[in-house]
Image (cartoon, rainbow, N blue to C red; front, side):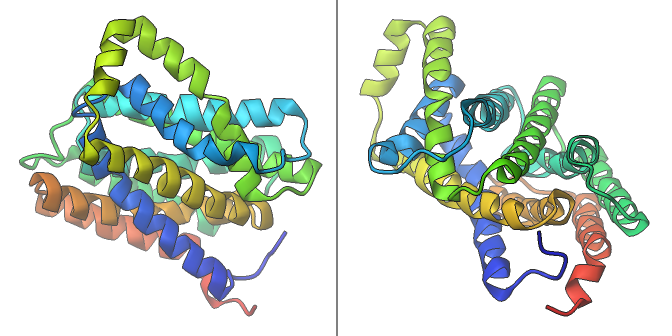
Length: 298
């Protein structure tokens, strides 16, 4: 486990992850225009799991693979897709889901015994104040979110944090290749997603949605499966293998900056000035949280 700052390669990996995940919310909204939340989840993980026939299974107990697949797949994205369908704007979703940083810190302390510092708590408190500012402000789009959409997105954040800690806990059991881990765990949520799609939408509706997939929806599914899941989560999991969860997770607080900007361009979501002030507070909280890592020697 590294105690110093991130290497240049790791910093570049984080930048790629932040960009992919920031654009991810716009892509999800576009996909949900034609597909139900559960069917979009199934297709996303079918794409991500496609290499399973040529990728070796990680040498981990099955309960880690199944647990991570259910938490990160069915839990995080099932709840997130439902939230987006039920009134959560794309830009706001990219922000609210970053409460995963707080959940990761708390779960990491309880389960992994990771220590935290006063500086980390101060940074997270400042970032949380920024989140509250953005959520409380009322703009033309991103300030208007439904209560159920908000609650589902917070639940999604909790499941993401649980997956973060599971991935780190699995690394203590056996060293594993992150790409293999993500591919195999992506198999897990496919059947539950399909079963829920058939239950909520009906088999006829599922078939109709599949027949209606056009090039735009197909590209959205490929983006979610290949870039957002397979590439970004592999890079993210690799970072969590080598650094404390409380060190890595707060970096995802940069995702809303990309997400809200992309949503403004794609859907005309216009954050109010107070919401932009909240974004600045989120960035300040990240700097405070990571101060020692920014200035420590390699």
